[in-house]
Length: 295
Image 1 (cartoon, rainbow, N blue to C red):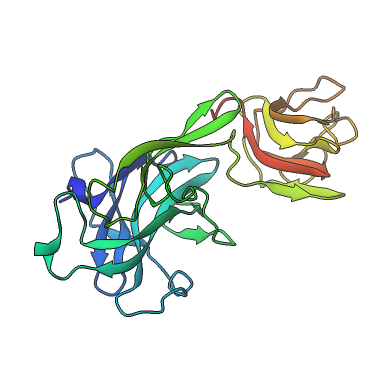
Image 2 (image 1 turned 90 degrees about the horizontal axis):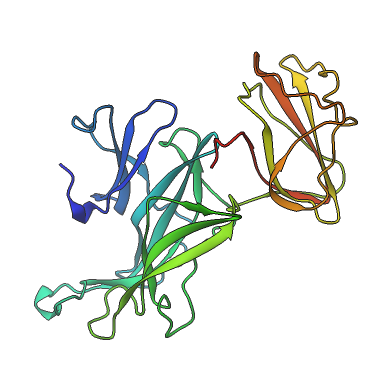
């Protein structure tokens, strides 16, 4: 049975239609971790399975008794051909064993939290990004988010050329007393879909697996001072006439929603799977999607 103290984040699997409930609960050996329950009808849920926990790298900072690393919660977003997540990594500095000394509004567990980025193809098996730098870092000491970032909303908001995520922040560490500890809502901003990028110098090349296109190809890339071109291949790798790199109109600016096109005015085939090739020179690719599927 789930309850609000489990810090639940809900998502829907775009491939199966299942509802996904990511929630915090303790593990006997790893402290607080993230577990996943699935449901096809939002009434009957699968037995929770452990899907994300701190590892030895997360614990490398430990020096004193009582210190540990936990995951406070994790927001998950379907994105592109898989999922991204923003887990709050909790570096626990101390725990009050005498709960009588914990004042109203105070937590017995003290420490600092910030937010990292992880990715998954199926919503269950997660890969860490390297290096493990915060994607939403705590602010300067004394600022509204200078102490801890304790949670991230479970929905991204795409506004014009930006992607926004709202989060809950503390002025102090997690276990500080009131009134010194104050909570606020903050907003993190990236360029649209700009969580990460594939960066190329000269002669960069990306080729997708065969995919069925449903409309125009939209490229989100920074090609200021460089160039991006797009080509299409049949599933077996044969070039598609009039959709080659040589025919491609080049992207040579910084654009979040540039539609790939060719001098021949050819349209991408939609009746069969094709491979998409991107040639990048001195450019950064943030996303590639079809029509409005990535919002």
